[in-house]
Amino acid sequence: MSALSLSLQGFVVDEHAAMQARWEEASRETIKKTTKPCPNCNIPVEKNGGCMHMKCPRPQCRFEWCWNCGLEWNRTCMGDHWFE
Image (cartoon, rainbow, N blue to C red):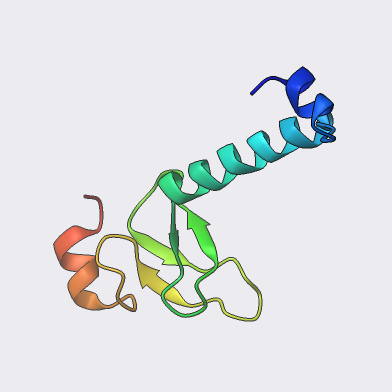
């Protein structure tokens, strides 16, 4: 349905709000594809290089975990998949 026909039916399309909503949805999709939730507090964490040893960036959490298996960082992770 076009903006004109919506307008004729009493609806007004706020183009700025529509554009903002599209950007927000694109951001949510990018976050979903490029992050994993911290296993302790569920905040999205992005890995941008380095080994699989992660530390939650949230100051109240700082949980150390393995990007690969999602478990608390341990010697097995260090030995089996440090740089996978």
